[in-house]
Image 1 (cartoon, each protein chain N blue to C red):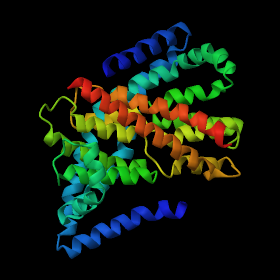
Image 2 (cartoon, helix red, strand yellow):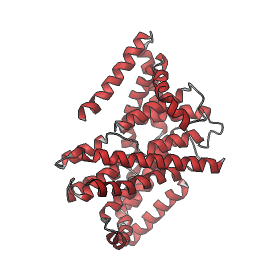
Image 3 (cartoon, rainbow over the protein chains, first blue to last red):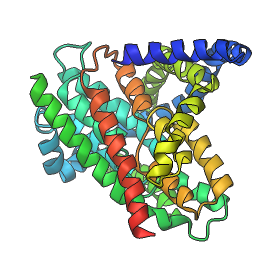
Image 4 (cartoon, each protein chain N blue to C red):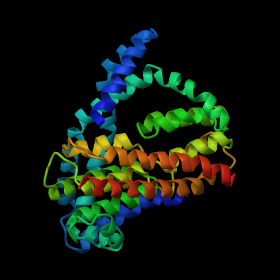
Length: 192
Length: 172
């Protein structure tokens, strides 16, 4: 599916760009995309290295294990395929908790570690496992209690009450997470 | 609010290091070997991100989306939902930075305390960039077949966007 979406984006973009005489911008965009990517990676990977370093301490000391035990009853229901006490539960727990505080960039390294450790349990290394997809849905539905970026943006534009959207966001994010998890369950059953 | 989000990371680091010392871990050595691993993860992401950025930026820069949203305008006017939020709803699952710049535009044009301002803030605050996370997470471990992951993620986003509109209509 992602192959088709990718192709459609490119095909439509280029053809429409040519038809509307916009191809100069498209040309520039194609040539600059690798630099844009490198800039993004350069922004991302120091953060990733920092947190994989910190988390390595938490892992070796057993803190990650303790932490995941706290919310593991809930996680075990969501991830029935992960064996009890597996380290991936600790990474998933950290990722979810940090995301809840609206610190998406800080949560990403934990998410990457979680995927890596889920891959160890995965039988077919090129195909996504059920646990990986459930974890992805948890992430993409954006379970956030405090959307820090949005609040600061609203402050920048002189909102009379920048945090008034916390409640509406919370309700929307809970609904979307539940919907995502239900969809995940239904597709998982159908794909078995 | 700001105090909490500014405190969580320092406290987390503090707890991790103190707990490591208590458990007699060589905290510095362990940190360095972990960071080294992070470096490898970071660079293995490049080809996946490059592909995604190439596709998305071509589409966005071609201005095709504005044509599509123009077509939907009458239908949206009919149900009294401002068509201005459509680009955000479409871009939110695709790119975090693109949707953030759209949100910033909307807040500037309509004001953060307007209906459009509230709905767009709620959409941005309640969902995350599905396709970005998908590319990043699966890319980092070399997954090629993503099965139903995209479908499930997009359903979550769609519900999030619809609920955002409804809930702002109800609460404000």
